[in-house]
Image (cartoon, rainbow, N blue to C red):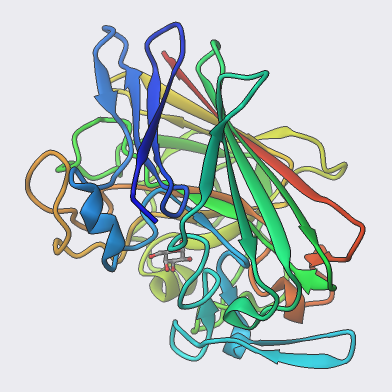
Length: 336
Ligand code: GLA
């Protein structure tokens, strides 16, 4: 299939560009407090780079976002083996996940946006069931990008979808995001073992570097002496969003003081993986010249909990025939 780019714009001039490859959001242009529009997501100028190895820039991630321990799980008595593409674990759906496949794209009829569709075949990347997935990208006139996921299967399977955009609200990708102020609506997070699999318990954020219950710069505690930060080489953890009723709630707020740009994230998902681009190593070309260095972006990946298929106490990620998986995440842009 041919790589193509789709543009969505709203009446205020905000725009996003989406590739049919991986449903990748390759740009989001939003104004700062003076009205200057800049691109606030990492990616490549030349779309061809997306066909090569990259760290999920802007992509839809599936069938299963984040890690599954040892690339294996048991469902209805049957054991499934998946590719181990992250040490001995599986990461982000395997070797050819949803970030690397071509999606059908069509305009939405009743909203300003597009619908991407993909059918993942029974057994693809080792997962059971033919899984039909749609992802809608909608850009509203209140400057909100809504991402709406739906999926159905013909065999019992597991599913966990997310959007893997790397944001830098400064619009300058040579700058680190450590000065961005972040608030997370979460009293707990999931501590990791040293292969980055959640241990299974929920840990209070109080008196730890993981406390973002009031606005705090991402950089304030990122270098603190802390076993968990060492494992992630910075933040690379899932927070438990305070959302007892599985409603759409505000999960995060990010504010960049210099530009005034603010992004509020709403979701109905139980978890949010905050990843501070700890593994970017100045090998990939930046859109604005130079290369992407460590911590020049942050991801707020709304999702079910990593390794949920192996952790019975976590909210279930099982999808059965006849059911419809639905989930929504909104990114709302404004200035302060
Ligand atoms: C997720 C993972 C990270 C890293 C990035 C992609 O956020 O948790 O460890 O793999 O994706 O590079």
